[in-house]
Image 1 (cartoon, rainbow, N blue to C red):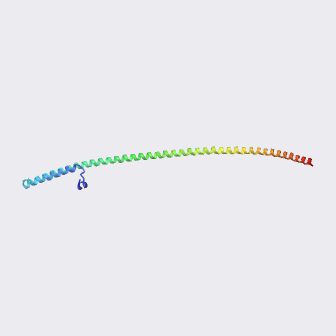
Image 2 (image 1 turned 135 degrees about the vertical axis):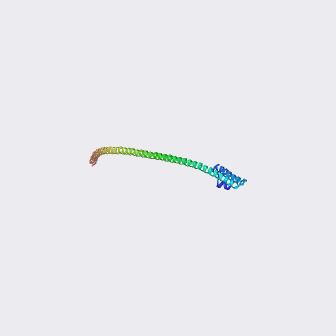
Length: 178
């Protein structure tokens, strides 16, 4: 491609047909100008050909205008349909996300409540077990304390008895040695 073709590319085959049409008009005008006719006939023929070319141009312009309007209407309808579809899909997605968000929040709230209830129950159970264990330890300590006190009293009495016996034995051995 040369530089001109790159800068001004041909959009469709209609450019080719326009070129043929314009070339045909120029050829007809040249044929009329070089034909051996008198001036009045020549002007009359040129006037007729110009009228014919003008009518054809108006006809082609009308067809092009109608097709352009049809295409514009079709494009507008398609764009409107596309915008409606996109809007509806976006609304659906927003609704789905919002519903999911609410479901997740409800699930989290319910789970949090269940965890709180479980922790409360476990705390109550532990508190009860600790209280019971504390009471058991206190009872055992009191019982053990009483036993130790009794054993200590018995041991004291026994030691006192032995000490008394030993004292008497020492006294009697002292008296017998003197």
